[in-house]
Length: 452
Image (cartoon, rainbow, N blue to C red):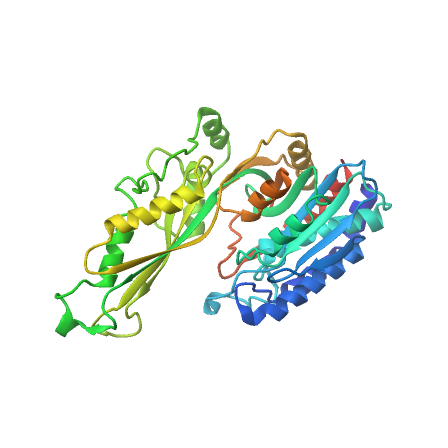
């Protein structure tokens, strides 16, 4: 172990250069014009796994390739399956970036680049931990390791599930290591034991066959934009609860033990407000901010479209308007039932004089795992050794749909390692990742893979 850690220290600059080379590849899975860049990232990852001491290759399914790697020394040893993704979110709006999104720059100890925290930095760290153990620590490991790095996490593509189902017997593992969640605070890592699920929906309201002159036609027919506003307003009551019949069916409420666990997490509401830039906190009555973030379901409008929004005035009754909506789910909620409840709600509240279309999007159930299993304790111990402070226990408000696929196909417990500082601005301009978090993540992998 000490030799592997010394190897890390002697290769810090080279590892940083590797990360920067990786971040320069604009592997945007959601935009087809970047497909060749995604494949370049897949080749980069495969080569890196091979150099670290794993046998690696690529699985070609109905989309961008999934990269896999394996180091199996003894079938009788426990096996850890490491998951990550090499694709990134689109960088728009480009004008809000302070530095170029695909030219990594260090500002006050932070790497600024698209994908640095989500998920290229943390997942690369897990692969480099193997290199440190194999090349610096003597070669033999107390665990078997398998790696899966997909290229469609940010666009919901099918290839990783196709790979898992095609190779489910050989991929059986004692736990799945996923370094794609945040720590508690700067310098304090966390083991995430819960993720919210997801239901995505898009609604479109149409009226006239074309945009109409608002002076000639206004007041004589229903305005799709106004109808859309009424539908969006109907989603919540005055207390911040989702006003969709059946939405809360089966919800696992925050019990006393969970409430006490959450209350022990240090949380600075003033700093949270400053980070978000919002003037005041808001949410479901009867719950704290941290409980709302990780333990309660939500329904959010992600975007509105329709009509004219350019410079100046254009006096029209728009032909159509729409909204993109996502719900975050907690244990006990069935994504299919929630999607059906949303559709019924919109149909029941749709004003007369317009037509409504409800399009179902991707969905995933919530994840809740036991934070006291042997491997969960091993993960917390590894992070404590790497960071020098105890790892917190947290629940994340976001979703990682592939976790459900691992559970459904392999029945494997996830170990969600929170090794980067929260407030990373993932999916937003100026995404950032502390360089020291990168090295701490490598140390975490060294202790977890080398200390079993």
